[in-house]
Image 1: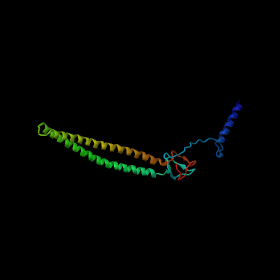
Image 2 (image 1 turned 90 degrees about the horizontal axis):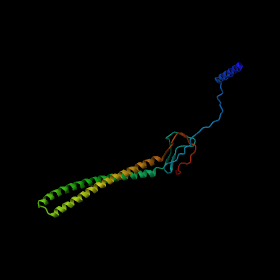
Image 3 (image 1 turned 30 degrees about the horizontal axis):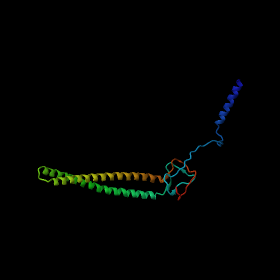
Image 4 (image 1 turned 120 degrees about the vertical axis):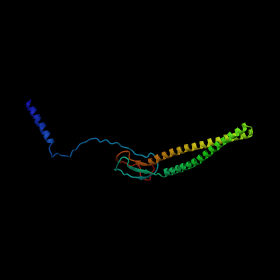
Amino acid sequence: MKTIYTLFVFIFSAILLSSCAKDRNDNFIGSGTIEATEVTISAKTAGDVVALLIDQGEQVKEGQLIAVLDTAKVSFQKEQLLAALEEIDLKMTNAKRSAELAEDNFKNAKKKLKRIKALFESNSATQQQFDDISTVVKAALMQYQNAKTSLEALHVEHKKVDAQMHLLKIQLQDLWIVAPSPGIILEKYIEKGEFA
């Protein structure tokens, strides 16, 4: 039993010493499995490819611009929305003036109604004069309310166009295709000038 133990210690020592030797052979041949994740990158918005900035086999970084789609249509839509906002702003300026004028007319008509009512109660004004100024007050109030409603409607229209502008900015960003993660381009399924 002692000889087997001595033999075992001798073999173990020899293996240990040989593994620590300086002139090892670094050419290791082996087999294994390497896992990779394939990601297919596609445009979120359809359009013509105007620039393709990568080639097969090229390494890309996360967020790197790899393709650009035609932005002309979206740019024209943006110009339309900017013009619509400008038009709404002008209409709002006019609506504010109209509301201020209608409010002044309403306040003035109420003052006249108060004076005519006092005259009517002292029999110094006729029923016709009182009825006429009452009608003027109602009409002035209606004009004032309509002017305020028009102004509120323009505020809502402005919000709607602002939302469309925000959506358009997102669509414009979607025309710039970027790498979602670092990696290597294995295949290109599209070329410059093709529809994506």
